[in-house]
Amino acid sequence: QYSQTSLAMQSFLSGTISQHINTVLSNVINNNNWNFGANISTGTEGFNNAEYEGLLSGCLLNNRLLINGQFGYRDNDNATTSFIGDFDIKYLLFPNGNLAINVYNKTNDRYFTRNSLNTQGLGIIMKKDFKRISDLFFWRKRNRTKETK
Image (cartoon, rainbow, N blue to C red; front, side, top):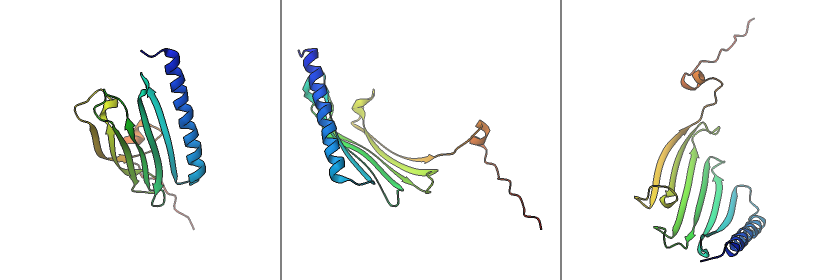
């Protein structure tokens, strides 16, 4: 059994270490297109079942290919896998982002279903701004005024 004080101190220490690692990474890399980070989180047994994650986000191809990911190691006997490999890759088909293709991989042990270790997917994302509900479902032609001579 771990005391609540010991667990709280270990949690505070892991958060402080993560913050310092992130500060060093942002100062060393100094790139506007890419962000790197780290996350160390303790579990119910402190550092005996902690998670160590590296975080990555960035963009390529004129800000049309967006990449987000978490990769790391989980020191937990109850987990189905020790590897953490969550990522989300989105490609904007139009520069305004109204239509995009999304590819992802998510670890299932963070959710209620544990039938498989990971969930992968491919999808199409459509974004549309609207003021009324009817604008969402019906496309309207814009009224254009003709120049008079």
